[in-house]
Amino acid sequence: MKFLDLAKVYIRSGGGGSGAVSFRREKFIEFGGPDGGDGGRGGDVWAEAVEGLNTLIDFRYQQHFFAKSGQHGMGSQRTGASGEDIVLRVPVGTEILEEDQETVVADLTQEGQRVLLARGGNGGFGNLHFKTSTNRAPRRANPGQEGVERTLWLRLKLIADAGLVGLPNAGKSTFLAAVSNARPKIADYPFTTLHPNLGVVSVDGREFVMADIPGLIEGASEGRGLGDQFLGHVERCAVLLHLVDGTSADVAADAATILTELAAYSPVLAEKPRVTVLNKVDALDEDERAAAKAALEARIGGPVMLMSGVSGEGVTEVLRALWSRIEPARDAAREAAKEIREPTKWQP
Image 1 (cartoon, rainbow, N blue to C red):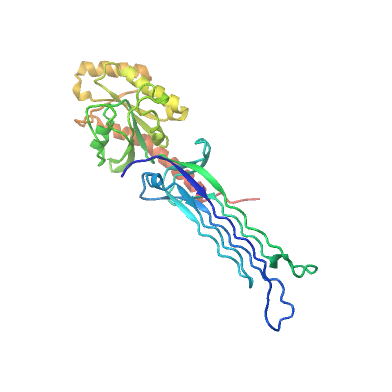
Image 2 (tube, rainbow, N blue to C red):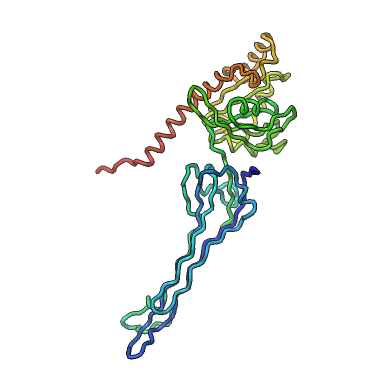
């Protein structure tokens, strides 16, 4: 299945049906009076986060979603049938944006969460509604309200606990394949990863989800390489795993490039908890390891861990370091969800 994380859709809710102008005509009934029914209500357009989807590819082939309009009212006080609603089923983690791609309409982060995108128009009143003591035979009815038409963007941000960032060929896909059942493409050339990958990682009997995104290069915020279009997939992560290629000629410059691109994309992303790891240390001797680690620590101003995704050296320690930052974030999210489900009782 092809991965697609951005799609444009055109939606329109149903219009309301018109009210009817009708009079009761039956034999032996001298004063029949008005009996025109109301029009039916137009269908709504909803978006719902569902389980089992991890791409927006369905919206590549169908972009227009129009709800049914309500039927017109009829005589004998018959109300028109309401139009059927339309539900856009999207993956969990989908953001719905206005046409300007900046204004957020909704952020569906939980399974089953629904949001109303366009409300259907109300049906018009039939002439029965306008009968009064002084107007016994009204000959007017209201037209139904028109539906709402909108152009929206759907942007998918994968739900993951940890996100992998680094330059191309820093060993991100190799690490993900080593610690999970994910099977991303691995090769010895840049930009092997062309779309995000997810993997479920287990450490000490606990599991969390890790996301691998295509590598960043200098100037990614300006559109170079694959750009920073995939950084949105790590915005929701509790911690970032910054992998630096230990065999690089200048590990400090490589780390600085990633930090600069993260800050250019979003200050919030740049300030996320981060675990910096010097990868591919199996190719370095003790002196080279020490020199690279010292240079990297001096550049980022924090501790650096050593790891090799190929040999497995230091992998468990890195996973434990990630979990130590993920667990508090999960507890905080659980408490926030509990407060939403159980609001504080009102007291005078």
